[in-house]
Image 1 (tube, rainbow, N blue to C red):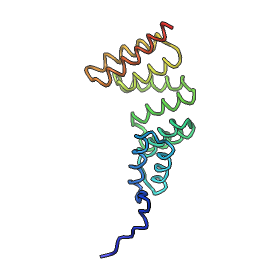
Image 2 (image 1 turned 60 degrees about the vertical axis):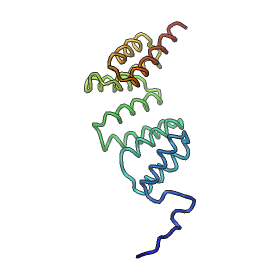
Image 3 (image 1 turned 45 degrees about the horizontal axis):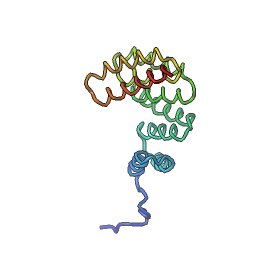
Length: 172
């Protein structure tokens, strides 16, 4: 039996790529974006592969106001899983953060065609219209989203929140 080498776990640092990835997730949950970036980069440096790492880093880059890096990561993830709806929705968020709202709307329209009635896609489109100041379109979409929520409390609350924001903006 070989002896355990403790030198690799000094200060509780993650040893494996998976441990680094899990630590990155923990840092995201705490809102510690710089630390999360450190750990997800460490995971990728240790040959961790999975679109989840690129998606996580995309999220971190968006929080750190670095949308170009986020676009790079979401593009890598989509090359590996081109039909992944969650990744496509994240791409629309990146496009919005780059100020490319029309491109985001075009992608969302395509996704609605491919996934009619999908709550996430529809609410994402409503949010983009809201940011564009197209309040009538946003209102109609959030009403549709509220109907789609179909008794799912989190979705209904989210759609109602956005609908209230639209109404508040319209009254100002």
